Image 1 (tube, rainbow, N blue to C red):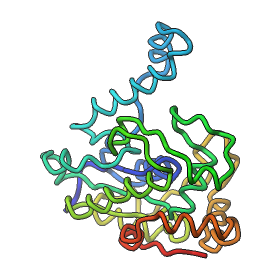
Image 2: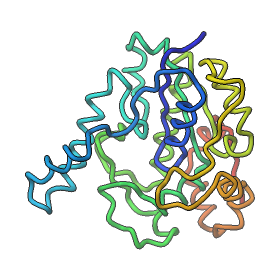
Image 3: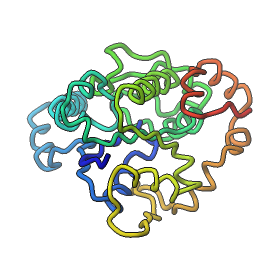
Image 4: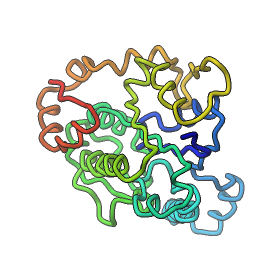
Amino acid sequence: MTCLFTKVFGERNTGATYLEKLVSKNFATDLLRGDFGVDKRVLRLVLQQHKPKLRPAENNRLRDKYHERILYSDFGLKHAAPPIDVIRAAPHSENTLFLLITKHPVFFLSSLHNRPENPLWNHNDLEFDKFITTEWPISERDNVGDKPLDSPIELWNQKMRDYVRLMSAADNVLHIRYEDLLSDFETQLDRIADYVPKITAGYGMIRRSIKASDNLRFEDYVRRYKYHKIKTDHKKRDLEFIYRKTDDEVMNALGYRKVL
């Protein structure tokens, strides 16, 4: 079945924005919104109506409300856990390709440690071993409840459980491991081409980092996300702790293994 719409879900720092740009570049599909879409000038003027110390909280509240606004049309923001009930009920779900992009839990935690991208997080100086044991604050748009999580590991567990649930709840779902996108680029895009038409015979790559602060190329990311780097770049005790806390069933469902 050819899908008219494409929706990308991916936690922060898992390549979700990169995948969106690849889809837009290579496929004829209507990409459903995944980012906070309020004009920056408008947002700035709105926030200026609040006292400076209150602006971060108001900014976060507005992002939650934007997620609610596009929940029933575009299934919410891309970093949220998929809204399973909304997807089941939405008539346009059957015409939507859902792309789920993930990282190995250790790679994910390492990336999140470097870039928390959480307006409620205020522990930016923590070493990695402390980071993975520290409570993780969540927002409404995370769609994982209303209480802080025990640690960033539990963030991976809860979001990935809902990814696995979505694989059973909807017909047009593809799971793409970020590591596979780097190591076998064309094969992963061929999988997408089974659901949405290609624009040209081949595929156009995006070789430079989409993060403005990075001066990295595609090849740099390929080298960074080799599975053997997990063992060489992290302490064994940290890896053992992560794997004790990681949901084994979810890891297996997503095709990941423990590297020690």
